[in-house]
Length: 289
Image 1: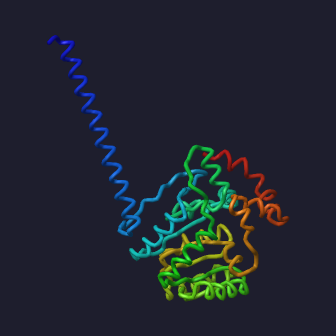
Image 2: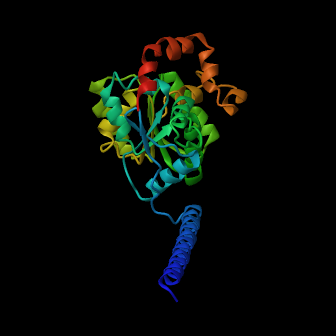
Image 3: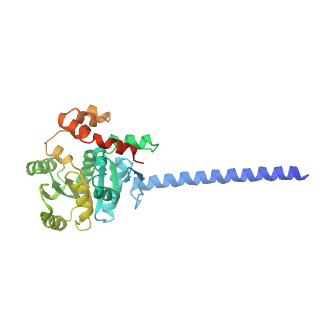
């Protein structure tokens, strides 16, 4: 056997060995994925690391509603406190240049859901895979169902007095097993905050929901999350007005086709809010890396 033949056979053996290693690694990876999914499905996974990307100078979690709900329940099961969930849409992103404290609040959040289609399109435009948007009202509904099943407790902070009272009434009717341990309207100043925090902390709710404008709700949670004694702190904004029957959601057609933003823009007040007020900042938004 000459040297060339020997070298050829050695090369063949090496390639076959490498192929076997690759195949074996592939099989192990598939088993790992199956095991991971089984743990999620059976509830035996203690902690799920969320897919995270950074765009516009902020953290974003382009994941599904189901993943967020599973993670939230996991946090509660572990007894974690002060978990902050923040929804991000175009309106919020347009405020980043003006409120650096909002940037800090978003980046310190545990979960940042894509509340609107704007951020979803922007991420997809940059080649980032996004399963779908996760509107705060929909995620709120999911968490309410979970709280009702588990008999968990809720504290509501925000909205007009009549709105939050109507919201409490509707929640009691729809989810009778939820324990609403406290509620308060969103009209308060800094001098009132100590009393509010004391009240929330004494009730120790599983969920604290805030119906306040941005950046007030995000900054409030970041500032006091360690003192609130609540498992989950989530700023849901306009969901208070929906449950309080002040406004209605877009018709099913618009929601199904991801056109809720268009429905809002067709209303005069929303057109001014989303187009006229934020137009000067769109170039800044689109140019952020």
